[in-house]
Length: 475
Image 1 (cartoon, rainbow, N blue to C red):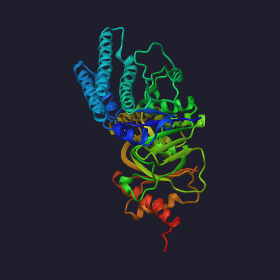
Image 2 (cartoon, rainbow, N blue to C red):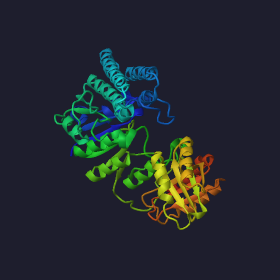
Image 3 (cartoon, helix red, strand yellow):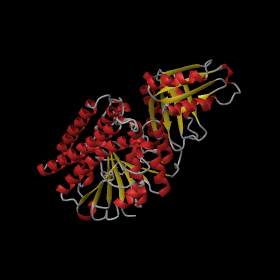
Image 4 (cartoon, rainbow, N blue to C red):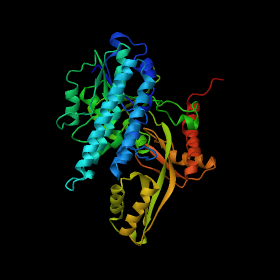
């Protein structure tokens, strides 16, 4: 247990030349360079172009191909990916030979993918074959292009700087056979010695389980955690562009936030539920079971230890983070619901079928309200399906927001009472609030325009004022 497994996200990868001079090499020399395995994401924006934009839903190659009446749209989308990849590695590579090798790699992979899609399109022109049966494989094929490109670029950059870097491509490009994720990683690392070389590993791994089927675009963290567990890593480290802090510094001010420093997987799960994943919950489970501690660090401050996430309980009660997200409240009111079973199960089935993520829920005698993370377009379809099931029910969706106060141990802090008071004193109204007996988070429901002011008010009470009370200024 002498090495670490470290993940670098797409935004950081786009500043790869800066990472070379800080995290990847910096002041390290000789043996100090090694003992680290890096799992990399695609350069920022590339996966959006390959699949669809993560936030706006703007179609990429996959979406254009899946819905194309003609082949012109997805061909042009694939050309845009190639141009973006070329621009991405040209920004960070300095040697013409490295640029030429990266360009050839892009041409080979892009044209290989293009030929594959053309052949599949031709095959599915026959009635016995359906394109729908192959869409997940297409999605996986395209995803692997981005990570393979960024991993190669990082390897070339490091080799040019004198580092014994080694590309470990788990994307299964032109591989034969259908292997599990564990088999893919194990076979790829049979001849790898991280103590004398620096493996640069693709965040996407082709395997029989189909990572995207279950994790969609969270697959790189699954690869990262599985690799850490299988190789017996001393520590798993996720490098972000910021520290894991008590709130968004852009919202409450960089001087007001504090770095968490240490927390546990329970808090990490609550953050994931609020849409700001420190790590995918399934990836966290893999690390916990393997007893590999997780660290979240700032990629551009390699001397800072960041925040350690493990199974340790808090030494004393305290709020660690205040965050929030936009939600939609799906409200189902039915006067005859009282004492009748089955309503909740039926609503859940509809939400599951439409792939709607549930953040929280409340219910009373005749009303069930789910707070969900979804688009209004999706919720209109959900409303129609529920109305068909319960024609007498009143079904409506309403755009709202949720602020959350989170900590390993909130016992004795009166978070619910003090939070309601803080929001009221900021001139905002709370539409609902809840706190479970586990006491790791308290949620406040608000109008969307009130979310940011509420977060600032809650952060001031529970973080800033609490810190001043704990560490008063010297007279």
